Length: 567
Image (cartoon, rainbow, N blue to C red; front, side, top):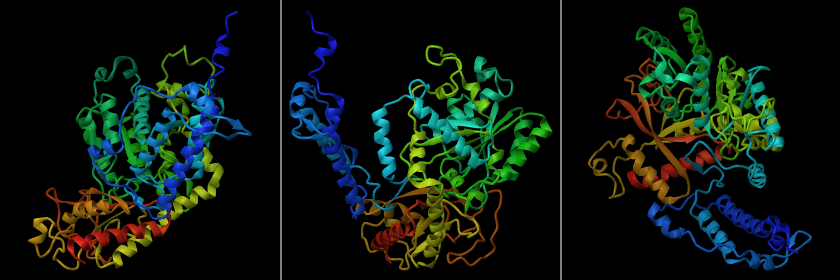
């Protein structure tokens, strides 16, 4: 009698048996790497892509693991490995893991990784990633991910309660803030311009226009491209002295748009600009939009991109930074920024969940009638990971008070760091300097007391000058900091115009003002770039590690700057 299929496969080791061997090995490698970071190890070894290709020994072998051989090596008793000699394929996995860890950025360095807007995660996040990998569930329909679907809907409802969107609100997790912003625009188009669903953008007699500040994230323009609106129909609104949207300029631009025969469709406000970390005045922006609606008897969508600063909604202390958020049509929040939740964890929240139904298309082979928890039907994706579980597990670990404390610690440390920069003879606070303006970033430069560089390799323009410009020192200092590897910091162009009258570097005022062209009310800078802007600065994002991490970063910049340009 022929053997059954199940009998033929019985000799193969179970996945749980293989995992019982390899997971402890991988876990120990990861823990060792984490400890290196926690004990003062480098954030990253600097190598070129070509060097990494060789160091990693990137290859794609023909042969894999031998199932029969592995089944002989793996024996279990009470859930523990007795004989754990790996086969060739497993050895290659472990060898690759060692190299990948060594040559990757180590975030487990107590805040010394300060280059990006995310940080290391916590133990709950690490455990959640393992759980999601074990589940391997596609959270597009309830039947494929029942527990995860219920948790996602409940998590969205809880965030909306914090925002103040009300009982009719909705939303879903998305693979990053850019994706959330893109879905927001798609949802706005499908609701306000419903003919586009069938006929496309070219069918419109009035080209739709998007309004966003000149300090907003580039994903707004990407969304416009994806939607067929085009970058020329993304109108940039001027900003004030710290990079917040100028509402008077928004009002003027809305009227200009109508006069040009175009349709104001969508206004994107930013809560936590990418460079300065400042917050647009949502309530004032909403008032301008309401006035426009009444005057022209038409609609316009208000979206708030809170990818960087939206997690402030968890803090009662700093909640006022989002004043008016309940007036928005939609909002993006990224818990993986500010709450130590694993990448990626982003949410698009909407004031009325029915708005998302405009994105639904027929897919009756997947989406069946009456399944209210089929979350994937309302998005432009099909396959989707249940990233909401990451925030849910963080909530279980820390509670609401613990999540709030992360936000408070980060923003509280910002003012202390700014004061340290003001007091230091070799540092220059750029933005923001106004103590009444909380922000999620600190922008600063190195400023030598001595004009003579110590390093003969310093740029010739610096060696020849008796008054080297701190603006031109940013890149050389950044390169030196990266070479050392103790901290990881980034720089960014600051597109705020230099003012002739502004506070000086120790915080005392000349004549402080703001204007619609973005004149800078901040520390005195030495010169402007070719466009009249402040130019490149170091950007220190504020993470929930308290004060010590920021001070370490400042010390490293001073040390590198002093070696290159003199103390």
